[in-house]
Image (cartoon, rainbow, N blue to C red):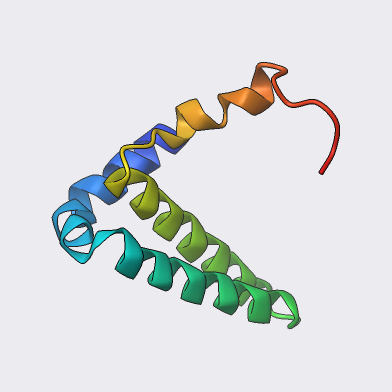
Length: 87
């Protein structure tokens, strides 16, 4: 599956409700999932880590959708040599 395909699937399944919730509310859900991922990373449970990575990606796609950002296009900067140095 391509990033764009997953983002589109998220939009088709949850888009209406996500837009009603708005960016601020959606961002709070995203942050909660990042916190759950942080907890999972500190534990020795691969299944939980996998689940939390998936949840973070899904909520990131949701945020991108309601803010009209194509994530696949956005990450092209990493492939096109537009990134220089390290952060």
